[in-house]
Image (cartoon, rainbow, N blue to C red):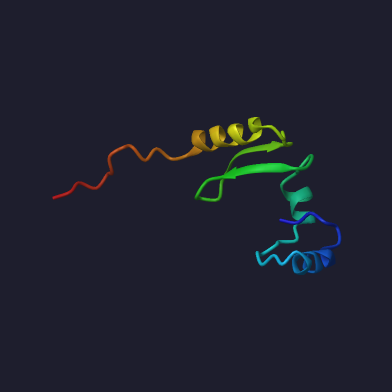
Length: 88
């Protein structure tokens, strides 16, 4: 998502840096709907689209990455449980 107030700057930036991914202009959505209080903002969203964890900020040390990995692990579904379908 891009938070620029002027979405007209997105396409030239992508072309200049030869980027080909989709960018969603989201200034109003992020500030009004998600109620973001600062950037960078980080969300962990489950497979059903439910926000499980959110945070604001970034630590340039390895603590941020480790913290995000830990947070993802906490919200991952338990795949070690036996499936409900019985095999015949």
